[in-house]
Length: 596
Image 1: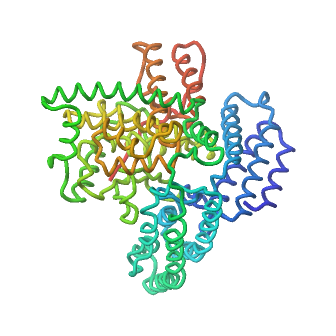
Image 2 (image 1 turned 180 degrees about the vertical axis):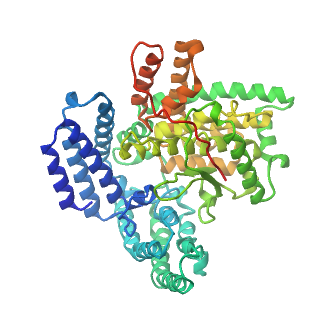
Image 3 (image 1 turned 120 degrees about the vertical axis):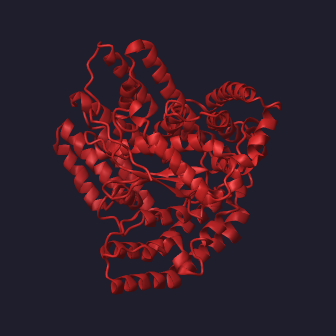
């Protein structure tokens, strides 16, 4: 965000009362995020940022840090006692988020801009795909971004070079697919490049002659600028970065790594739990889920042991499709079946539709089983559940129901789209993602599959437990590798011992934990907190417990840190007993969710 504009708006805050100051500071913070991170603005449909990339120069990074510190200082000058009751949550979240971000500045995260899971080789095609494509002006914006890509590539490489000098890199073993990911963006045929995909799907409203001119400009930029710049970047990664990257895997190997990892754990889980405490929780969850899995094996009549049953699930042809089209069709069928059952569990459903698509070919090999990309009503874009169709022999049918529940409905799409549609909360909160809440909700949603008519055969039920086990194993493995000295091979072996997930998936998962330390802990920790709150509500309210009202209350304020969520839901439980009064949460009529 421009420094002069920022300072002018910040200085204007001093003339306002507490409530006005809070509103203005939220407005400024929201604009700051959208304009400082234009890619985020694209996803949210924010106007005026369509031609820009985030400034990853040292100057740009330091400017953002300084501005964040100023926002934090400004938030401290708001007298919380003068705020209205419904404004105090806004203030608490604003202050807490700014404080956590500033605390994180003591660690050089910016020197780790690329790994096999994230970085410009993934974000650039994704952002270009999310840009509006309604008219010629939209395509001019795409061209402007394409023209500026070499600058972003150069800035990214400079950060990587600085990290390399400080011996700060992702583990070398995780980078093996990175050069291929980069080169997948620049095939010989421009029309096959993910960077130019938009020019293969131009709307008929653009005259044919204009389409030809726009397409030719894109191809010229591609051949003259993009191909050589991406190629040089791939060569740098291949010849310099990977050979000199760290061969150790523990994140705590880095300077001040123990404190850095602890910060990441608390940032991702939004709790004060230590890595050691989370490790113990994980071990207990693995034991609990394992016993439930053993009971299902017995119910099937299978005569072998746990590992033999896992081998059976991994290898029996009955559990695998022969074509990508069949796999995607089944995901879409499951999604439609789920949609019809949702009103029994939710009083409020989102209006924004979602679709099911395959993960793009350029990233599918090293990508996880699935992921969700939020949509935006403002940008005219539906949500998307991306399913991995690479290596069909590692995509068993018994995992598909749990996966669909998590990524689509009632998991990520329902929760994120509902948050986006909350008109009574600030846009800053509508678009906020707290991993502990968002992924905790996704994992909790998997347990709702029984209420949605899923998991009717023991293999799919075992699949649901497999996914619960997967997240429990994460607690053990992530903390094991980064805090307790486990090797990568030990982590893979532990995963195999306790889960029937195919080996390819297990390796991809473990490598994910190596480059995103702490992130995978949020799922199970968030799920356990939501389950704890539901159990408390059921026990307290007895026959008066209403699952639809509970879910609406849980989701009605958007994503929240787990500590804030617990306080809010405890108040809601008491309000249901009639002991205190709490305003209704988003009392809207149910709307049927759509899928494709």
